Length: 424
Ligand code: NAD
Image (tube, rainbow, N blue to C red):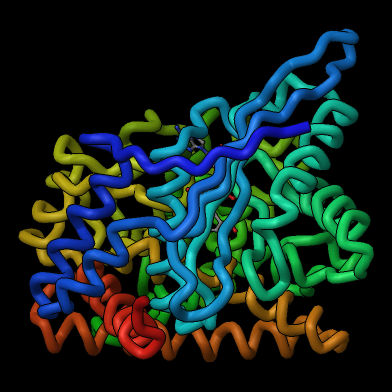
């Protein structure tokens, strides 16, 4: 029993307003049609539901669930589902718009969406989480669809929640449609290569940028902040390419070793240590606020948002930043990095490897034919290299930063979709 409300209010000084500010900047530079800009400033659908769940205690708790579809001009909307206490309508709307731009930069036939439930998944039992996920899937039965809106995991969710959601959705529709959700476990239609895909995309983008900068990968040093899904795979794959990883860190500790860190040993250590780096002996522990500003050529922030700020941007020594995390650089830090001639491969390009392999999962589900990991990786690398090249070209053509170049690349594609599909 859930209630469905369509919301239309706007929030001043909101996260969505911050997305619109960068959108405005790119739109002005590329001379985007006012009509298209007006369309993109309004998400196409916002849904809020109330989810009454029977908790293990025997009491009913009511959770807020959201799903916002920002655009469908290039195809069905795509974007994750987040379980976190700070989920709210404004954040979901901003993240949905971000997905429109990310999918367009990667040239995927998708629009953008995002969903979330305001909850603290770590304080809930597996049974409570399953009931919540199934209730959410049921309440979104008219929103989701294999050719309509395709969710995936995000913060606080994983293949486990995707399995419950796809199962509930398919029970309701009476059809077996695995492609209605991506990021599923491989045994129920997930794609090989999905787990490492975002870190792999970071590596491919770093390789493309180093080549443009005339730097030899085996003479380059790197620091990676965050040692979870994105950071650990990025560090492993960069190291396999010959890049010397001199710094790593997570929320428990940061480490530096100018001679290079054995990443396989760090991954092995973390896997046996509750997935944290504290206590790792392969490098010297340094204060966490020193990690991003320590000596290196390549910096990969792959943990949180807003870590490169006006306070530390001026002290960054790297020549290249590849944003594994979403939103690691604040708008105030951008001009400082630009003045220092640091090349920043922006999040909507740098971490689009994940959604690219989600797209491959959807394609494989629709075809009912599954690829080897080598096929997935090779198609991914090719798509990422093309995406990098198109952003690089827009950046050069418009004499701007790669961040604005990425927005321009995305907007040029979305503009065509909006104009060709037209309006009532
Ligand atoms: P994760 O939970 O697997 O790992 C996060 C890592 O960040 C952990 O190692 C954690 O210890 C570390 N961390 C947290 N707080 C920190 C702090 N204060 N200082 C230093 N390290 C800290 O998450 P993830 O999936 O690797 O996601 C990381 C970032 O990448 C997020 O911004 C996410 O939105 C983004 N992203 C992830 C994917 C994906 O496919 N997983 C795709 C696109 C973008």
